[in-house]
Image (cartoon, rainbow, N blue to C red; front, side, top):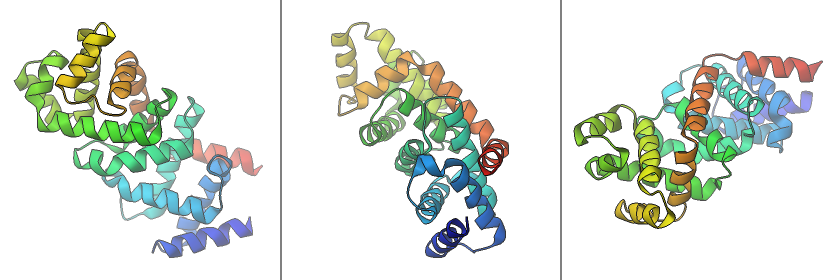
Length: 239
């Protein structure tokens, strides 16, 4: 609608992006396709998506419209193929991306993990904080976590340096395997200094659902390569 386009232009102006036909069209596509999920006006959605684009540094290019269209595509795919919803995935991703990005996690890993966490019923604030803390601890003391992951220090350190998300999943699965009962699991968490709020829940849920996390990461990574899903959704709602 004309009102939407006007709000998008206002939103783009507020975040200092050019109000070009391409940029407006890219956001409009997402507002039409996912606006009901996000709620709020088109200007609010513009801001939320722009913040997410700023946080997903590895896919950020000089082409604003193309970047947000691909992010919108990933959000639509994750919602269509599971229980994840665009606003919750965005909230999770925005909270995790700053630190996770500096550790080399890709946008696909961040969005996929966010979707998996929502599907596993993990609270946004507690879950994102716990996830970041666990990543920081694994990166700081790989030798401590290698044993739990069931790898040699050398192997695990290499994994931490090349694929921290993979190292995180290995730690979760290893902790659950070693801690067959709750007492043993609690002891492992204490040893790893990961028994704070939410860490146990994140590790135990990921341990039991490692494949789900991997599947969502692949889904998000593939969906960030194109805009076909969001375009289909837009066309469906526009007709």
